[in-house]
Image (cartoon, rainbow, N blue to C red; front, side, top):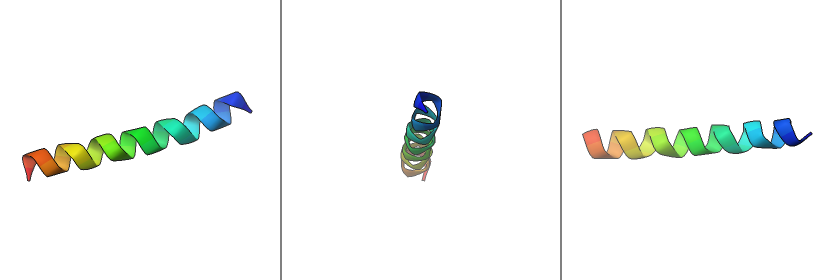
Length: 26
């Protein structure tokens, strides 16, 4: 259960990191 939650949080975190990288490079 905790792993599932952590996975969801990790996916969201990764998504925002990717967006930030695209903003800075773009």
